[in-house]
Structure formats: C-alpha cells, structure tokens
Image 1 (cartoon, helix red, strand yellow):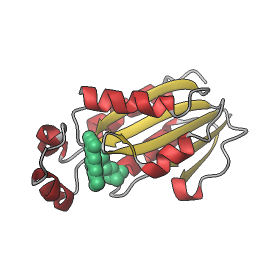
Image 2 (tube, rainbow, N blue to C red; image 1 turned 90 degrees about the vertical axis):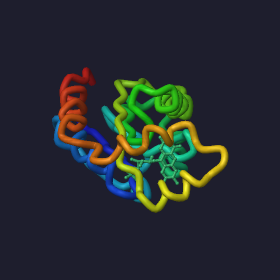
Image 3 (spheres, rainbow, N blue to C red; image 1 turned 135 degrees about the horizontal axis):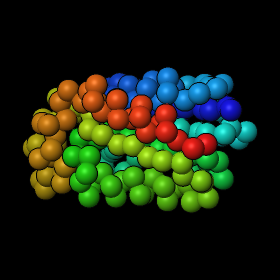
Image 4 (cartoon, rainbow, N blue to C red; image 1 turned 60 degrees about the horizontal axis):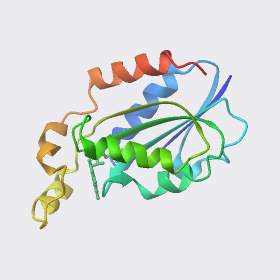
Length: 159
Ligand SMILES: Cc1cc2nc3c(=O)[nH]c(=O)nc-3n(C[C@H](O)[C@H](O)[C@H](O)COP(=O)(O)O)c2cc1C
C-alpha cells in the first residue's frame, strides 16, 4: 500500500494531525507540505489536511483538492469553530465537493488554537464571524485526545 499525506498549515495545528495520520497509516508513505505536493496519482490513499479560512478549506489545500480526481481520499482539518458546529461540518462538506469524484475513505476535524493576533483582529470585525464564540476553547488544540481519536480513525480505515 502506498499513501500520500498532504498538509497545509500556517501555525502547526494541521501539521500535528498530518504527523498522526502519517504514523497511523501502514505501508509505504510520504508526507509533504501542500506547496511540494506531487501529482495525486498512483496512491492507494491520499490524505489531505487543511485549516479553515473564511469558512472554507484554505486556498492552497482547496486548489490541491481540485486536482484529486478519482483517488481514495481521507480529509482532515483544524479550525477555531467547535468540531460539531454547522460551520465546521459545512466546511468539510465543501471540501468534499471540491473533489467530487474522489472515493472518500473518511474525515476528521477538530479545533486548532487560533493565532492570538488574528483573534484580536477578528474580534474587532463587524459583523463577527460565526465561529468567534468558540475560538477561546480552541486554545491547546489539537490535544492528545484529538490526536488519539484521529489515530483510531485512521487505524480503522478500510483502504
Ligand atoms: C486568516 C484566518 C482565518 C480563519 N478563518 C477561520 C474560519 O473561517 N473558521 C474557523 O473555524 N477557523 C478559522 N480560523 C482559525 C484556523 O482555521 C485555526 O486556528 C487552524 O487550526 C489553523 O491551522 P494551522 O495551525 O494548521 O495553520 C482562521 C484563522 C486565520 C489565521
């Protein structure tokens, strides 16, 4: 089995998930930042990780998802919003819509600490984004429990 893990991460939260996915997947595997990602062909599993920006996967990951074609895909994401919020769920659904022909093997998303400078700016915005009320609780995430859950999901994937 041959897997590719592609991640986009500005402050390291999504990178933590990528490292967990990398460790949990069996067989031959390669982990790369989205800027260095190869053509997504010839893999049994492609895992793509993104962070949420304005309610959507960040632009670099979104562009890569549009190249996925029919590949078997695992999606993972971090965000300031609560994991079970409509905001986070809609964003994951949107990510899937960017790769409409992919065979989605599974998804995982959790909160990721928000850069304090960005948080300050966003708090002063009017109107405030819908996820701002969840942002304080994102501090410290992804934590060991998040990574443990991700590990269990990836370990149980049927590829
Ligand atoms: C410019 C900017 C926009 C963001 N927009 C959203 C958003 O729309 N929804 C959300 O839940 N989180 C948002 N966040 C929070 C990040 O998605 C979150 O902190 C994420 O874990 C960052 O991942 P990274 O450390 O891998 O870069 C935003 C953060 C930044 C810096």
